[in-house]
Image (cartoon, rainbow, N blue to C red):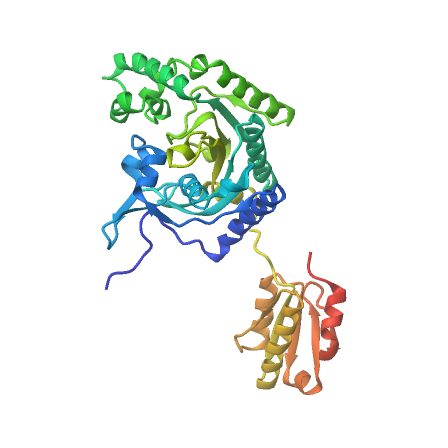
Length: 421
């Protein structure tokens, strides 16, 4: 019989790792909630057309990496490769713009792309993302970057660098696109095959090539900063000035382009020196044309996504697992004692204490060993003698000191001692 295993590019997140994930999710939720961002949850699969129109058919994501399939109704569906297009579709479909002003939304969940699995990169991967819709103010760009920085710093990450660029808009992009075609055309025989294919369809993506020879040629390519209109320059200069006022250091990177066609104006990445080649932990930018492109009213917007797999790799390098420990561990032996132990455990849990009940029924010595490994500060011990007397023993696992308490007074005593810190 074939051994069943997780598919290539997917992985199980086991209990000894999940605490890192919960820490990230809780930290992000707390920070974004304080900034009045509301959580949104969109379907894992959508119409394929949503991503073709939104991301761009000339991108690697749409051309090579999407998980698309026909359902029983012969409709073309796709597992979402990113979160923004689905959020924008929901924004339009449910008239979230009707209330006026800006919409501050965030999401978390799995995404799917068919690419070569490696450290921090899976075919089923996870993101936390943020979308701010309804304003073209440079302050919005600065706000979302500041929130990403807040989340990463709150998690204790080090060696982080913000790289920022402007990819312009409309006529800016058209002029720059032609400049890149003129520059790279003489090198067609030297750049990689993917870049040759992109030359006529999407030359900005050549700047993001991982091929070393193509990268070397691209070093002398024209800079988009030289092709920005006055309006685009003013927007970008204001974003940079606001980042300086927020004391957020950044590096200008005129070669920085994001892999999705919907970006306009500001594009940015937050990178870590601790991840080698897979340096980016957060990426995003402004996408002022996407809502209209997907059938909505013209709506400026800006957002980002944090890749959780890469972020977890960083956290594992920086800190021990934040797995929580119980406040108390309950040891019991004997039919009457075990029944009472279950009831007492439930009472303590309902009083907001973290309590683990040993269910093994093994000898006291083995249960005490498990209690010590649990990380609890104290052990509650109940045998048939204590059960008959209505008492229970409280044993400090660090000092070994022990005291006998009435079961009726246990909750009051433990509340006074408080939860473990």
